[in-house]
Image (tube, rainbow, N blue to C red; front, side):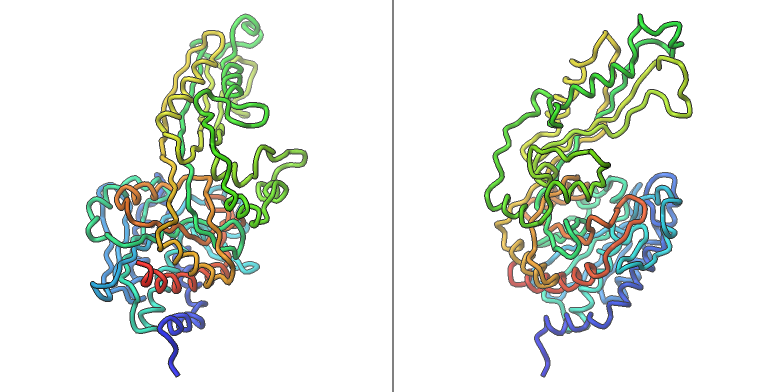
Length: 463
């Protein structure tokens, strides 16, 4: 007896998963690095490979989109019935540079399976999502004979360089991409095999500060003592930005954040990640402690944080007996919903100027302003997502925050402000996205595929 369409779609992919792994390996072998200085032809080759994959998977329309100054995007769709709701799927095919190649256990663009994981640049971030989207659509088309919703798929080619042209592309193709729900697959899970739905993102304020006291570096024996040291001045300025407990001490950046709701705090506790476990994830050196003024995930997801990304006065190679003529640093603040990026930037700049000692010259420049983001779970699409994730992974799904900023979310939120955005993904704490030895857990990829097959059915009922 023939099962339901959902059962048929699920059964279709069961024996074909090794083929999906092979597809992922094909994509990983293409070094589609979108950063400046890397071959643009490889990103174009990656877009063509994605388009070819989607055509084979049954999408009725597939197009490589050229946009002025941008690496190529891929747009695909399959309209089952104009009366059905439409779901827009998202992923990206560009990747980060390989980093320190000698630190990789295997070549970054030669995918290798080890201990149930696939290693290679882009395996987790974000080519696995491309394969999952394509395979889920094919499972419905060829396993069940048709989709329960109309599907559109946008695969970006410049996410790793800040999605610089995404907003313009969404404006140009807004009518084509209009949908009842967005499934943005470039997020992660807090543990291997634990399905998560990301419901908030921190924003980002980044500035650079440069300190000068004289025209050029001076001999430390001839001038040390009477003249101020720019590197020391900068150190004092940076140290003034946080207190002894690591909290931000910038006037104007101490908004009173309400305590976490009981349900959210209980959900954090259920994740099984306390201070000790978080320290292990961060690979803290012996004797280094996790700050104790809150649950570590609360501090990462729902509290602002300040970091010095880079600092320079000289270098190990150039170190000599001088007082350096200038000192420079890049400083960032991760901000949370409720904070305004421009106001935070102004407060940070003012604090650095106030803290400058000894009359040193201070030059400040804004590098980046990214708004924080949060979503309302009241829309029925979120209930559909939680049910689908639980059925696909066999575990109750968790609603989580993200301490980072995802550049493509804001353009989607601006273009489709009333459309629910479901942030999912297959990364986990072992994935090392952007770092050496990036990998994806193949079991999670398989479960994510099952979850997306369920999700398309759930959204058909919820939208």
